[in-house]
Length: 337
Image (cartoon, rainbow, N blue to C red):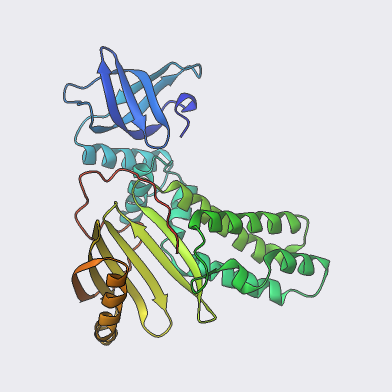
């Protein structure tokens, strides 16, 4: 969000850095510190987060804010309800959940963002599934100059996936490569006929999902990980709730959905394996000594491994499976696979 060009009515969450008569200095995550005019509420405290609404903006650096009343949770709920109502969107349970995530990340609650965010919870629209669909669609095209050009840009299937056996490519760099490929293919088919519309829709979906993943850095660090394992494309997800708690999720052909809840304090590690079937958990339990030995070789101290049956998928809408730490604001890290 660009603070000094935000139109009246824009709502957002920010950290209160300083309070002075008629003014407040705030820190917007990822955007730096800003000072604006406002009537500061009596219960406002430096170092606390609050929700604000832009009352006026002359677009020349003079911004007047309104501090929203109520607890942080009450303010968030009111913002979501007002945003859905203002966008003429039904305030059903699912839209409210999606709206909370958008508000938490200072993203606009509108139909487009709701649709893209919802797609991140759909396994059929995971990057891995979208890339597989893309390769199949290009392969089915009749031979032509366009087909050859698209196939050359896209390359072989393994090029667009992370080969976990032999690479440690940073995810940010990988996402940039996928997005660049999508942009080049969209440019190539811009003047093509209706036969290429399904490819265009898939490419646009990939681009939208990557954009949303890039912006979702406050509520939860979320990554989709298309990778190749033993020659086959697979899909994985990584959720980081703070510096200690996260979830690694894999969708497998034979074992179903397997999730690992992790808690790490320095080199002390606690793991909880969650699967859809008890026999799958029994198999994982039988193999856990090998995992424990491998982690110990890396210097980790294993404080506990547990197992639980779990049928509900973890998504970007799910609450943290563990109590968050005191500082669960956004942080940065170099995640390599």
